[in-house]
Image 1 (tube, rainbow, N blue to C red):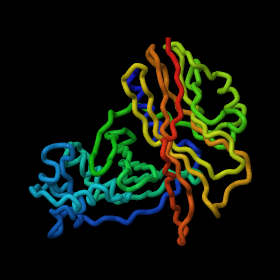
Image 2 (tube, one colour):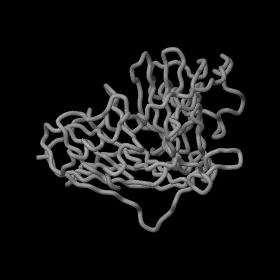
Image 3 (cartoon, one colour):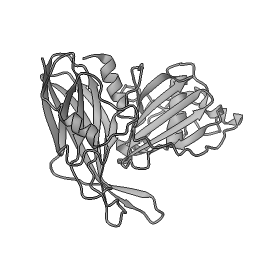
Image 4 (tube, helix red, strand yellow):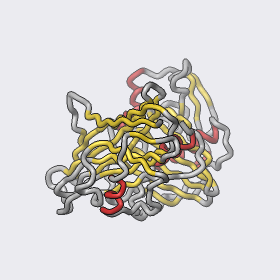
Length: 348
């Protein structure tokens, strides 16, 4: 499979092309004194500390990403697990990531603690179950996205750009950074809630066209989805452009959402295209639009090598309510059997 296609696809799930504008809020400036470490910072309670997770030195060799100091100590299991499982605020993830790629990867990026950041929450107003934050300082921008799940399961997806060019992209899960390949372009998935009503049933639909059917604006209507439906197929050639439509089916009101949160390409026979998605339903008392909706997403894959393919969509379901202070509360629905949507197709 073309590596560029896979990387492009992964990038596609990070940004929701709903066409909503960014609602950015200011971030407090940081003084130059922040570059020094206060007494007691070189401990597991220190703000910017890290340990090489997945190696023999995990929870033994420690490093301060702020000043580079190292020390050795094994902390008790409960203390260590609490540190790994803690929910990290997006602005902390921003600084933590830049310090990591600056001190550990030795990449030439500025000290985030000396920059004056602007920006903040940039989640489109219609998107539930996934949060996106965008920060900027001069020619540096950092995007942090994460699904709304339990703190210990929160995987942050981070993109760092300088002068408009991506210099690092990766994830942070339970204090472990993982880098992914740099990419040469972005190609967004297309989300929609109204145009697919009466067109796509609940499940996975394979779309085969001669070119990328994505809309550059991310905006679609009923005719657009009806035309895509006409290209649904289970066979394709290596020259065809393959996309997926993942739909929740029709609902009588708004408030129902879908969000792709993770993708993996598994070499097997057949090849498995594995997706993890969040779906959210409105809880009691949540205001919704009185209109027919069909939450769906168009996922562009591109041209694929000949072979058999199986699409697996693993679904996590949530109910949205609001707390006393108006904050969103997501309650996961736990079932004995995992909800799984599948489809198969052949490239020949």
